[in-house]
Length: 93
Image (tube, rainbow, N blue to C red; front, side, top):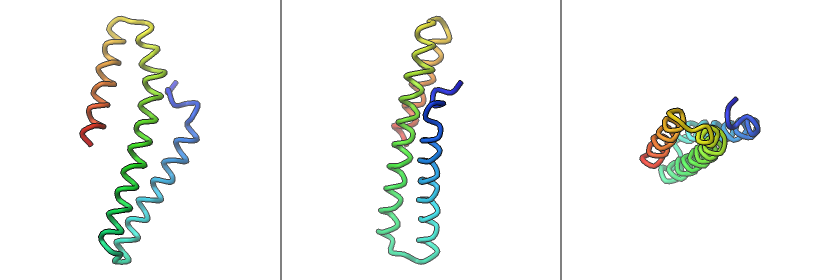
């Protein structure tokens, strides 16, 4: 069971909004909108994606990582490494 199971519908709504923002960007380019206006929308879309990623990471840590840590052993170590790597990727992006 995924750590986000309880909030899956919220996540899907959020992703649909982000998808709409991305389509809006495409429309802005097609309509030759002002570059700064497009960049402003890019920034908003990036923030929305980052917010989604952080929420998903928090749920992962609260469920998957916490469960593995409670059991201990090699699986816990692997889950901690996996979460650490995911955080590093988010920080670099």
